[in-house]
Amino acid sequence: MTTPSPPAWLARNPRADRTQKFGDAQRFVIDPDGIAELCEELKACPAHKPTPLHALPALAARLGLGALRVKDESQRFGFGAFKALGGVLAVSNVLAEAVGAARAVGAVGEARHATPGFESLMKGEHRDITAGFVFTTASSGNHGRSVAAGAKLFGNRCVVFLPKFTSAVKEAAIRQRGAEVIRVNGDYDTAVAECRRQAEARGWTIISDTSWEGYDSIPRSVMRGYTVLVEEIVRQWPEAPTHVFVQAGVGGLAAAVIGYLWAVLPKRPTFIVVEPRSADCWFQSNLLGKPALASGNADTQMGGLACREISPVTWPVIAEAADWFMTIEEDEVLPARRRFAHPLAGDPAITSGPSGCAGLAGLTRACTDAAAFAALGLGKDSRVLLINSEGDLGEPLA
Image (cartoon, rainbow, N blue to C red):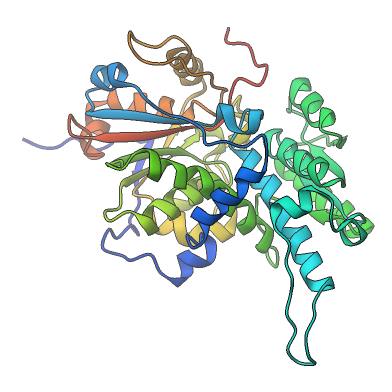
């Protein structure tokens, strides 16, 4: 009997070698060292606590799976999205490095940097050095809120550039955190370009979750923040997943999830990267074998995934270890949000936004297509991990 070919929306990664070890190229992007200690340091922040990893046994059975768990980032920092980890910690790192450089002491040729911790910065103990920083970023909403929250936490000015599609609710949430907002008449990539132009002219510090030539240190710092949620998963689920469906915009979350689990688990899970069809930059990059533009205009309700270009720094992780890339349709988003919100009997209810439920939309699509289900090796022994990357953030579940 001939095995049917996978559907056109599902593509195998020809570069994925499951015997490949997590090496120096990957460690440059996602360094697993010190993440457990970072989790401990975050306890100093009164708003921080680990987010839950929900088990959904009824939905797992309905989909023909052995187990299904969802990391619920809708509760992160009381903020509503995983990106709270990235922007806040990246702002902290920039300030800590500035203080360390300014406080350098020791003999000539033997400088020793006294780098402050998160709690010290939060208490404003180094304002003589940190007060002059102005932070800026481009965002579709969630990352901008995180950078704004970080700047407010440490007492700094923040300017956020938003593309035209960002909702008024998300703009208001950014302003509530003390940031100034500049609307750009264009998409996310246009907002990034304008942010870069004004930052260079005004001497502002960009906290971006995407990279470009000559700029990758801060995006790596942002992703390091994201690995906190992955370390929590490892602690919460000792059995570990066999399959991970993770949504991707530019690739920051996907790289953090894939890279950290690849580094620390004894057996690498099967990784499936999920994108909107109109913003399929990773799907197209996989087909071409190098960074490529999305095939569409990134006009999607999944605002956090509305990206036409990948973050190049993430390539050594995602392009080497993602086993499959897939796309989902716009009409698959609302059913996934409703399934989280109105679960099968016994499963917990989960509040999700359009980007947050993308992994579930991808999993559902794969489980209801026999060829995709078989190609991905799904079945009653599968333990599947999803990331609910955002709550509803004021977007109605109509």
